[in-house]
Image (tube, rainbow over all chains, first blue to last red; front, side, top):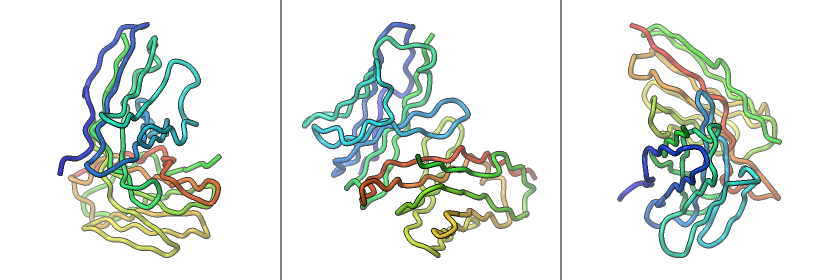
Length: 114
Length: 115
């Protein structure tokens, strides 16, 4: 049973480019969460999605960031016009149901903006 | 806004010693998690604590939850080098009477165990 998969594992972008981070939840999981971890800090919630729905995006920056979880395919976190401050590790987690089951984390995507 | 605070943030221990990491949180919550993170790696779930008075043990680690005090502890017994890692507590935020897995993390405790 494959765990949560994220790709790419490492991503380097120049300032102003776009970054696309992908997350495939565990089999049977329909809830996906994205978290960001800045260097030397804990994880910060960004967004919670179910298939085709954004449930809570209270942690998403108002500009340049968007997320989706389509009916088919992985969840995508998109960052437009990246800046150096976007450099961080982005973790995706999935759960079977939103509040009954614990979240399982993927390996993360480490984004570096040069 | 839910706040989760861990202390200490840095912990240097000798092998064989005991110590406790504390996790305080500011509002009512359904559940509390402890995670371990090794450098450059993802989070490994250690414990899920669901109710007041819950106590769970795995090897040299034991976690407890006091919902009235809004406090969880992670106790390390007879530390060994392999326990060196960063430990996070995370609280599930309750909203509108239903918690839905929006985790709020503490700052993390960097544990280093010396021979």
